[in-house]
Image (cartoon, rainbow, N blue to C red; front, side, top):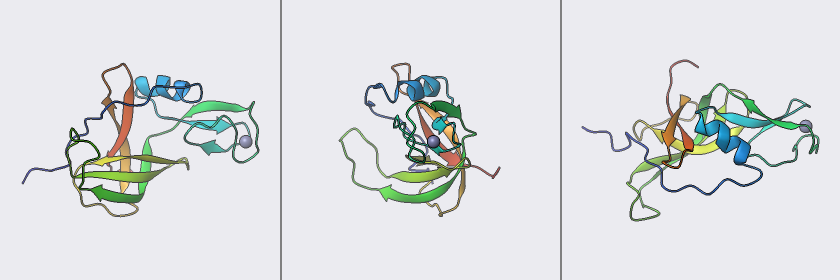
Length: 139
Ligand SMILES: [Zn+2]
């Protein structure tokens, strides 16, 4: 039986803005980053202010491992647009470094909270790339 969720072909993504352009630049090179503060806090998406210490001057992109665990997920059966194939898995994953990402899980529809996943990349066709996650046995 073929896997109904075996690929991820992303649709158009929102343009980069002042807060996200550094993240998009790293993602274009298939490097996953989170906003990292000199106080040690890491957060995603980029906010321009640290949610732990309120600093606006001490934030920089910090590369992360791309290893994560499934924090929550849902199987989407109703396409948001006619050009989107269903079913697919929309998930929240918790990076090994702490922050959570809203993302897609690719590789079947049967997932369990806590499953180990690792980052993969889908090229957008405009020079940028979008992370998604696949099963991993490394965590
Ligand atoms: Zn901070």
